[in-house]
Amino acid sequence: MATAYGPHPHSAEPRSHRLPAGLRAPFEGRTWREFGYVLLNLPIAVVSFSCAITMFSLGVGLLITFLGVPVLALTLAGVRGFGAMERARARVLLRYDVAAPAPVRPKADKSGPLAWMGAMLKNGDSWRQLLYAVLLLPWAIFTFVMAIVFTTYGWGLLTYPLWKWVFPRYADQPGMELWDTSNGGFYLDAPFEIAVASGLGAMFVLAGPWVIRSMTYVDRLMVSGLLGPSQLASRVTELETDRGVVVDTAAADLRRIERDLHDGAQARLVALAMDLGLAKEKLIEDPEAAAKMVDEAHGEVKIALQELRDLARGIHPAILTDRGLDSALSALAARCIVPVRVFVDLAQRPAAAIEGIAYFTVSELLQNMSKHSQARAGGVDVWRADNRLMLQVTDNGKGGADASEGSGLAGLAERLNAVDGLLVVNSPVGGPTTITAELPWRG
Image (tube, rainbow, N blue to C red; front, side, top):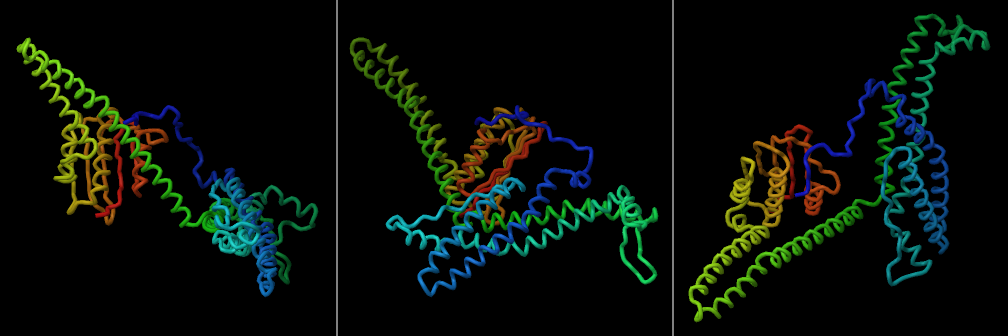
């Protein structure tokens, strides 16, 4: 297994901050990007809502004639363009990347404007983007008002001691007037009142970024839910990717088996056949030499049989088929150079395919432990949690297992993901290492 232990050569230490997150937030770039996103919501929403509602109403009204169909199709095409702009805005300001839905294509046996209009009207992604253009306006009004109130009131009150001098000099009043009464207005001019106002402003300033962040979280949900591909399309794409991973893995396994047979047992059997042919020729002329050659051939047969047994075990071990995961994993642990404890708590056996994946997952993790961890002890735990088969491999080695792209653990994670599985690696530098795999039960 190619996974290495130890700190990743390109890994960077997490940046430490002197100020806590609550005090840093008002000055961070993320806060001001999100504030800009919320401010842009309103003018964009007004334009998109007006255009979408106007064109949609016109198209529906014209449906009594044929003109309504192209108007509705053009409306949906327009909101798809608007959706592309909104995904780009979310990517730049929110650092939130949402994939574009699949393009609209007529059926293979149809072409022309009528086929395109029919495909556009039947496309669910287009109608979801029209819904986004409609829903954005009320949400944009709310978020715009909240962001403006928290930002302007917060910074205005916080900095009030710095610009209070404007009122007596230019407004002929002692300070900011909060309200007017029959006995005169109430002004913020006393030191205590100014301090209270400034403290209230500080509260608004500190709370503002988190209010804006929570509102943009809703924006993220709207963008991903209404402007991205549908859950069904995402699932189809995921299954196609997983199928490709399974096919590639199966092809790689077949190439490995062919290579092992060609370079190992097959080459040994060819040499054995040649030795037996020579022994047959010498049987009459030199019986002792022939007997010696037969004895050597007998040794080669034993080696070839052992290689075939190892190859068969690598394809699917007989002990796994006959006795299940408990015995098979105990046999794996016995061959590991690190002392490994095995605990399997399963009332019944999962599906044979899942059982095989679990076996080879533990096999790779134990090989990794033997080669790289420098551990003195390890453990393998297997149990069932609802409809999932859980595997956990631990060791007390030096840690730093790298699950980044291109590593052995990353490849293992891809193979598990192809069957709706999951791999979680927790391996701080200095250890210990805990790797948890999750597989569907499919009993």
